[in-house]
Amino acid sequence: MKRYCLFLSFFLATLGLSAQHFELGLTAGATNYLGDLSKNSKGIVLKSTRAYGGLFGRYNFNNLFALRLGANYGQLTGSDDNANDEALKSRNLSFKTNLLEIGLIGELNLPGFQPYNYDQPFSPYLFGGVAFFHYNPKTEYQGEKVALQPLGTEGQGADERPEVYKLWQLSIPMGVGVKYALTDIWTIGLELGARLAFTDYLDDVSGTYYTYPDLLEANGELAAALGNRTGEFQGSEPLIVPTGTQRGDNNSRDWYFMMGLTVSYNFIDNGLIGSRRKIRRSKKGCKTD
Image (tube, rainbow, N blue to C red; front, side, top):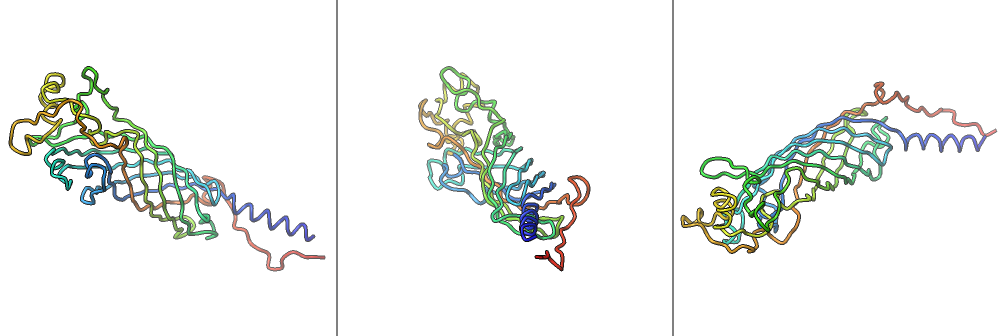
């Protein structure tokens, strides 16, 4: 009988560890970015912070592991006007882009999370995964918004110049969070995440200059005007920068960040994932004879 009690205790503990449930949730918070137009990748500019919102579905395989699929929509922005270096400031480049992200992310709850019957209502967690995102950097020029990617401001598309960059790209989300079960069906959380983008063109700045006369001939007047805006900043003729002069910084990837609050509904005992009855311990316990 003692063996039976030990087996039953182990079985019930295993049930607690493997309890599964599904969540639907919303998230909202702030975005920022680190790249060529955030002080030349030397720091995040707080006044460039923008808002984002999103939704997600999360499947909890057990107390430790969860997998979520989500979509976020927000905005990123940056400008040479934020630079401390006067040479960068006079370059006068800027961008703004809407950002749509679709990501598949795994979560590791430490020490564990289980809102059912308040078994483990609070847990920090680590997360990582993969995401695809769409962006389209634009700038304001003579009172109008101009999409930069079609222009080829670094001579993209011209002979012996880089190809035009894609507006759908891959990123690697990673970060930390904390979650708390208000009830067994409502969970709130706070999450801070970084995304390593597989592109250096979030801000349309990456490689080297294509000198003004060649850019004018290859990609047109608007591309030449926006490749380097020092002349516009100084009220002078366009600055002639030799082809091959560094335009972007030395980093080959841009980053963007999301910090947000989450709220989710746990589908527990509602028939969608399967009903589970609360385990009641016997007041008498197991007999030993």
